[in-house]
Image 1 (cartoon, rainbow, N blue to C red):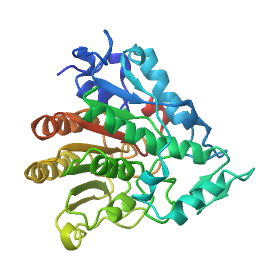
Image 2 (cartoon, rainbow, N blue to C red; image 1 turned 120 degrees about the horizontal axis):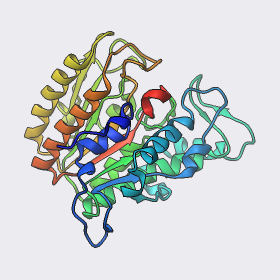
Image 3 (tube, rainbow, N blue to C red; image 1 turned 60 degrees about the vertical axis):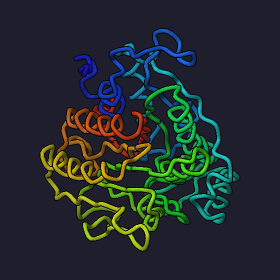
Image 4 (cartoon, helix red, strand yellow; image 1 turned 135 degrees about the vertical axis):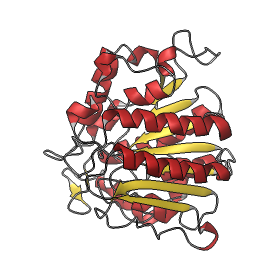
Length: 335
């Protein structure tokens, strides 16, 4: 396993993911992957930078920090860049109500900002960015299923895991991971989907969307108690989905040891499920330097966590991992 270069120090949002996926070793070329490109894809669009509200902590600079660090490390040119396309309405409606989609769409018709709650906004360019975020995650699924790359990091915004079927919330407009997971099921016929969410905040939207689905296994590690107030250990699914939700609430101050113990327990249970594709809701706000919470994860633990997920993916899913950016708000840590 190749380690990240020393000058990549704090880029846990992307560079450590790439290192853990073996990208720094080069990987083999295919007809769809030119010489010098790695087996890791990156979803990126300048349109993601146009979702903006002055002074908001979920800001375009998050992605700019990631790109700058990748370029400085000489990795940007080695990634297989995946150009996102807009998620079609039918893809959104597999997850969200029509009223939800229309509400976000109407925000693009205003000149100023529309606030869905005290944290969640949309401006004139936000609908386009949100369509490309969800659509980019779907394109990532296409790429790994078709064998163009083994894994993809989706450097997208706005984030998604708090968005429920009928409500934007928690900085999130559409639930990118949920839309992509349904895409994997419906378009590619994958039967067993694993979603691992290590954002510091519980992914209430993702959990609720799949709470009764026996074909989607959702695992979350998160600070507890904390926003949004869901994610207790006794939330395990309902109906046919009973046992397919696994929450690991972590007390404030928890660090690498507690995180890896929870993750390992979850992965052991997930292996029996035999996932055919693994999604990571890749939030990095549990990092010890992040301003929005009180967990104490190190930079290095994200690389170790990703290595463990990769090993499971290699055993059961043909190595297919799609990682989608969620939170993470300290720019120094991101880049």
